[in-house]
Amino acid sequence: MIRPDHAGEAEDAASTTSIKAPSGDKSHSRRSFDNWKRKPLTQEASTKMNQILAACGKAGRDLSSLVALATTPGGLVDDEVRRIAWPVLLGFEPGVPGDIEAERRTAWRRLPRHKDEDQVELDVNRSFIYYPKGMYHRAIEQLSAVIIEVLREHPMLCYFQGFHDIAQVILLVLGADQAAEGVSHLSLLRIRDFMLPSMAPSLAHLHLLPAILSAADPQLCKHLSQTQPFFALAATLTLYAHEIQEYSDIARLLDFLLAHGAAVSVYFFAVIVLSRRDELFDIPADEPEMLHSVLSKLPKPLDLEALISKTVALVTQHPPEHLPYGAWAKISPYSVLKTTIGPIRRQTLRDGEQVFANQVMQLRRAELRQQAMNTIWEYRRPAGSVGLAIFVALLSFWLRREGLGISVFGQKQI
Image (tube, rainbow, N blue to C red):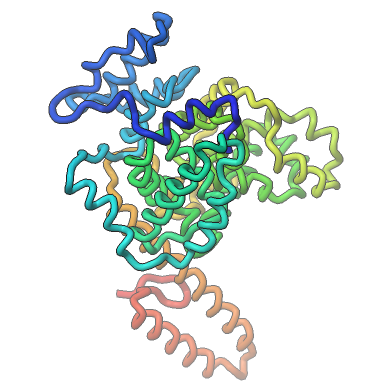
């Protein structure tokens, strides 16, 4: 959702860009930002923009510097710089204009419909509610096209309500030409857990929250122990795009989130909870509904720079692998919580699709194991021991035949 006072920025982002990433052998660092949008820049802003471009240069790309610059106050500064930096953070190179690219950009229209397209249309029609009326219909059409293109080209993805909020920001920043590529990389490599045919991987993100709070503030964690962490679902599921209405704020926050692993989004929410400590202790612990209601709404205004700084400190003090309750060990190795640690920008869309398939297989295994255990429990009486042995053998054979490669007790079959 976009506030009216940022309409100009949104209109620029949804249309063509006035500053484009150099192609060929030219480095991004060759373009200077001493004078930006015909307005003189401060020396500090000019220096930072040129540092960002240098970090994005093909000849000497410096991801560590880009991550640091995206994390420091002000982030990536401006949408025109983001159009160069976000593709680097998301792991793709902008397409080359021409007949071949134009053909590729429209080929998706000939692909079969995705099962979730009706829901997409309903949600997209509720987008841009603060957007200027003069641009509304064009923006709706562009957003719908971007989302449907991504879903048709990657039909295994399951759309979720709120996805359009994230895609909207990507569209506004990258423009219509790059948005689909950006949303595809985001979907398969960064928010893949939220686009699986089960909510279980999404809930795994939420279950990190109590562990983070326990490590940082055991007393507050105990106070909230009767409240399930579902209050963080809407914010973390949409990378806060559904909750933050100021365009400049959500763009700034995404600078930070895209520069770091997926777990940082959960840490960010933990910092918000920690910042409300006094307010939360004013609510009795035996009123979980009230606590849930308060925690499910982000405080306004958000001091983003302070929250980002505290998030970096919290991750440093309590890294995921050291969280209590064995929380990190319980996370699937295929989850984006783990696959976004390290060289994510060297992962391809094909890599994302393969990991997606692995996650689906893992979910099927877990579901079948649970069904098997429930059945075994029903036949737990001694008189049924022979029938149970036959049942287990048959079920194990069926699992292997289906390519799941496990026994009902979770052991790998050779």
